[in-house]
Amino acid sequence: MRFTSEQRLDDGVLERAFTLGEIPGILWTPGSASASAPVPLILLGHPGGLHKMYPRLVARARHSAAEGFATATIELPGSGDRPRSAAAEQARADLHRALEAGEPVDDEIVDRLVLPLVEKAVPEWQAALDALLALPGIGGPVGYSGGVIAIGVRLAVVEPRIVAAGLFAGSFVPRALFEEARQVTIPLYVLLQWDDEGNDRQAALDLFDAFGSKEKTLNANMGGHTGVPQSAGDAAARFFTRHLS
Image (cartoon, rainbow, N blue to C red; front, side, top):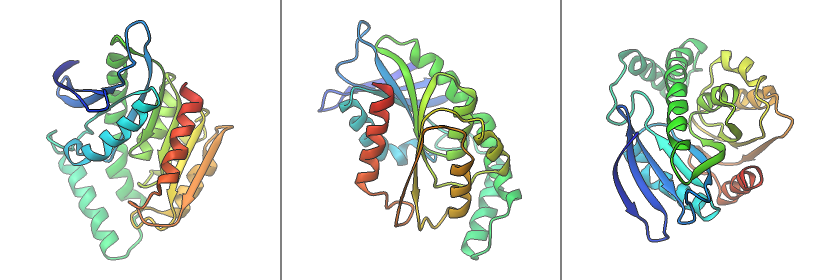
């Protein structure tokens, strides 16, 4: 990990851009973090495009810092300035074509688009976690928040350092991931927008039912993909405070 820039935000949060190999990322740490008093860490998932997502990510990071948590994110494979995959671009075009035509999105398109992303992104998140936890001022426990839900499912299964996850049911999930969901045992908090135009509501409900966690909460609200109410976000923040503090 190599830091490329840093700035102190007006609320005292330290924002540092970094690269992990060729992968760009951002780390935010509260002013309270120190080598003698390391803080918990939340990994901030997103749908790709760090520059585009920055306003939302920094808002989430500052909110978490106020609760005493560091946060970090990395760019997804094939997004931002990272090299594109021709196969992924074709799958994404097929997905958009089906949605615009009002047709059901078949499993084959979802598999082509999401499974390669999960296979590549999850090891990158784990490598980032290795580097982040080696920094002074960053400790455990670790949570995962938001982003592509299929990535969150896989991480919850394979990464024992993640002890709680807040997931957003706003993206398609390959059927193979439903079986993995049964292996998830950590506490979960899942947000679902009832009228999400780009999400299969019944599949999201089926996925929630499949999770093996003894503690799992579904917060469903009326509205489209970007209409998550502030109260739902506040409840997710309280979820992390319970499990990471």
